[in-house]
Image (cartoon, rainbow, N blue to C red; front, side, top):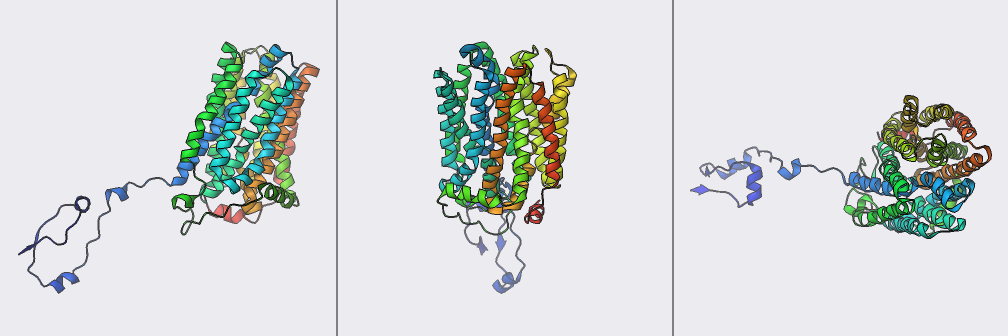
Length: 465
């Protein structure tokens, strides 16, 4: 008699290959002794999807791009606001400095709030605040309103989605490839600059500055549903372990109350170490020589030499292109080389390039200026992955919050130079002194980087590569 064996599902038959009928002639015990053929892998098993951590990183990347949109606007609005309202460049620069300082000072508290309420809620609320600040800007008529909308609201919102957000996502979702992911997320800011700057400069020149502010507000609101639906707080929320982690998923920790108290406690503890002050000092110089100086004052400085605003803004966008390359590469280097030496090289090269900038500015774009743009762009925020790695080595579980305080120093440095740059332009009629001073500060930062001590987590970080 023919035997077809136990009934199976159709999809199992398809995965198992062709089915043949067998004649039941041998002893059943002999059949049991025959070696069992290994099952072929199913088609579903062959199609292995990427770890969910990569999709979370992608959502974070898009979110940071949106947050960077409004940060691209200040340098484009200094001249239009000066011409329309008669406000001095120092006054406008002070509003920018409030924005930059709050961007940094909010970061450590935002990191603690993410531990208390979750990433999704904090980031979604921050995007709404950015949209409100940008939208209300179009109704302003007094300098205090500029400081409130552009300085306070946008500063608080963008600070909640600063690099501390990237650090939180990286620490929770990744064990391996942290340096690379940090570089990719950091490059999101440059991508936002690349996307928004040419568009916003075209809008400002052709349709004045108010439509540009509205454009950024709409873009921030458009990202809110994406964050709310797709971003997740912990790998355990979807039943996974972090990427590169050994063992089963780690259960979601209980919400930590007292976010403000925890942020201050982390600062108090970290401030007792010399490494914190070295990291904060070098990162303050980083902010002074990037966001405070080039992002805020490059366009008006180039315009002083006769270069059209659109051309100058396009050069900043090109910096954003090479910033992506440089930052991702820096993340790859950070996984493999001493972060302190990387920082020293980055700051030294940046300072050297800024020393040459005053003689390169002209009414047209010459090849030496293009070389500066490429060279400076590769270095723009390449300092972030090694700085974040050194915070992880030194401060463990509190590293995201401590990095938030280090980032605060970055933005305070940026805010000081945003104001000083505008005041120097009003006083001396030129930005040259500010370029040279920033180059000298970068040389000091290179020396400071070399004396930072390695932390107890250095071996663990290198072992996770």
